[in-house]
Every structure is written in C-alpha cells, then in structure tokens.
Image (cartoon, rainbow, N blue to C red; front, side, top):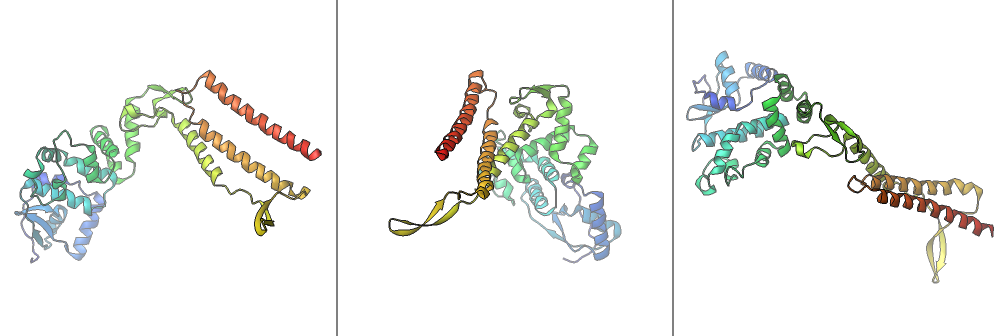
Length: 335
C-alpha cells in the first residue's frame, strides 16, 4: 500500500488494552521513525487501528507517511484476541508486564469460556479455540498459559495491581524489583505483628521469617533459617556422595589359573599412614553429611522422647561398634 498520512480511527478501549510504552521506549521509537521513516505497516480492522497506535501518533504529529494493512476479524472479540496474541508474541515484556497484559483480557476470556466449543470456533486466534467449559472452570492456569508464567505469579500480580502503590508498580514495570519481593512486602505489611511457630526448631518467630507463597494457608511451616539449614545439609550430603574414594593399592595376581587384577591392602609402611587416614576421613565425612541430611527430616510430628532416645542409642552403638572394631584390630595385629 502507498505510504502517506492516512486518517484512521482510534478506539480508546482497544488502544488502552495494551500497556503503554515507557518514556524511554517511546523516545527510542520516535527517534527511529524520525530518522528512518515508518517501515512497519500498521494493522487496521474496518478502519480502526488494532496494532500500531504509537507509530500512528508519532507519524501524524510529525507528518510522516506510513502504510497499513487491513485484517479481517469476525467480531470485536476476535480482534481483541488477536491483539493479545500479537503483543505477547512480539514485545519484550517482563513477567509482570506479561501477566498484567493477560489480566486485562480476563473478563473477555471468562466470557468466551462460557460458550460451548462448537458455537465459537470460527475466530482468527488460537486462544479462543483452546477455551472451553464454563466460567467456573476458567482459572489462573489459563491466564498463566497465555502470559507464559506460573499460576502463582498471576495471582500475585492480580493482588499487586489492587494493593501496591504506584511507585512499586512503576518499579515492577521497569523490572527494578521482582514480583515475589513486592508481593512479600505487601503480605508482611498485612500481617505485621503476627507470629508463627516453626515446626522444626519450635521457636515462635515473626511472620516475615517464613516464606510466603500466594496463598496464606500455604505459608511454609518451617522458618527460613531452618529451611536454609536443611538445604545446606542436603547439599553437604550430595557433595560427600560425589567425592571420589581414595584409590586403593592394586596389583596383578593369579586366580583360577589366570592372571587377574586384584585390590591389595596398604603396604605395612609408616609412610602409608596418611593414605589410611585419608580413607578414614572420607568415611567420616560421608557419614556426617548423610546424618545431617537424614536428621533434617526429623519433624515435629515425629519428635518424642522415645524416638529421640532411639536416635541417641543408634549414635552410641555406632561409636561403640567403631571402637570395638579398632580394639579388635589392634589385638589381632599385636598377636
């Protein structure tokens, strides 16, 4: 289509569905158009802009010619769905912006979800043909799918839009703060002064000492400090399990009339003591790391005096057994 300054219709409702460009993004777009012209055609439906509102505004203000292409949609809902699909596919949006964009279409998506699949399957979008069932079956899972985020993120963003101050929302749009951090601040403020008892250390701690998923009922029963200790213990166990066992002394021998590779004990040489200690240290480190990881699972519901005594008895038996092994060995070598 020939480039010139066309007079097109701007539907404020359609225009405002899309999150506005930041000041910097708008400036960069304007500088580009002033320098190189408007190379990307606008998209128009029955004379109304459905993509390119910012380009249209810049071109009209500066009398810069542009082209546009007509696109056919069955109705307004189909045009809106195309806008959603197009914007989510092309714009470099962060998780907050993507979630916010999907939430702006929530009322319409719920409306479509009420219709039976066969009644509304002729629209120019993949989103619509994938929706079925009643409005009650429509959930955060579908919103998350559209935005490419988790359902938990959708719930958090929805609450942030209602309760966060404008400065926080600005930081979220710019990516200067995370959704989880902003949401946690709101939750901590709401429950300021409240305390919870950690199921692991049994200490009463402030609400802010516990991790905060999207639903308060799901607040972690274990405090952040105990969670960190459990993770560290698991990490130590994983590291210990991956440590290479110090190599054994090997040699060649005869077994069943054939040459065979055999493992030999350390030579009876004082210089080999360091090798023996290294083997013993490896066994000790692996045991301690495994013990830490396992005992971290000893939760409040399991704890009792009898159970604790059983664990203590096991530890004592290990100490007694290792001491008996040492004494027996010393007696054998002495003989």
